[in-house]
Image: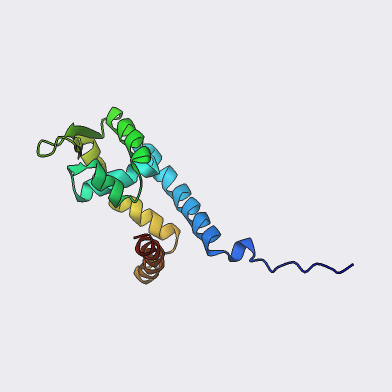
Length: 150
């Protein structure tokens, strides 16, 4: 009986996709203890970061900016509104649209952003050069998918 030849495999540790997934989990685990005292989760922190850049955004722009979907963002925004970090209101210029705005409490958390980012970059040993190189690789991954899905 002829022996079947097994196709070669790529080891899990050599898969880019697995390493991106592992890196995401590592990043989230570093953020968790930094965000806990603020009472926000990592996804909530990302929403805040977008609103610190541009307050009063339609939900659709938040979805787009965070590369997420309405099914994920809507419950997140509801929790943040209950926490008193944001408010949602109909857009007076377009009744179909809902604007998301920071409350004073949500805006006050802004002062923690630079400290948190500094702690994260130090944990991962990111010099400005290493951070720029990592961003280049990560953005190229994202851009190649967004360009191919058009």
